[in-house]
Image (cartoon, helix red, strand yellow):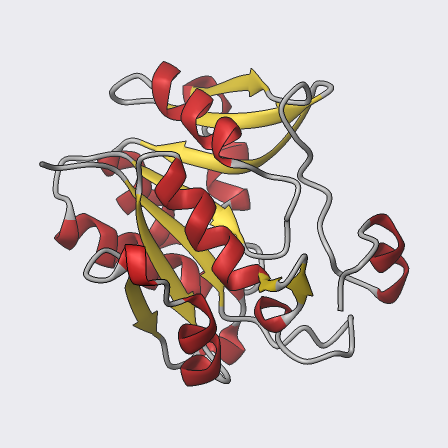
Length: 201
């Protein structure tokens, strides 16, 4: 049965955090990569984990017996280009895996995003639209895109901004869905952010 792909962007080096790839950080005993894969699957999506440096180590940490044959690990080259390279690769691969299905994009460094957030977005998503989580009125991640919108956004992704410019240029197609009651998209970007997540290491 076809189901939406949930693309987990995890190809960064984590330079500003200074602790290596953030996908390998552990929270409550599991890596952020493993957590994101678990969340994606629990929301009813097909997890696509997009990796750059240390891909083998991250992939090994994210493999789970119950996900065998389900998790798709995508290793990308040119990840030094920034988030856009991983964004394009993930969306293009999702379109081949599940043609005609919407594509959800989540970031590996946002452990406050749980399956309930993704499930809410998928449940209200409409064909031809972009559905974006909001937190107290502030647009954030995850983002669910119709296949045509996902392809167009991928083509235009540049540098380290992913689809930001595309989303800003197509605000009339974006439906924001309040999700602050379900979670948070606070990310782990610089050392000061670690204080929000006790036990992260």
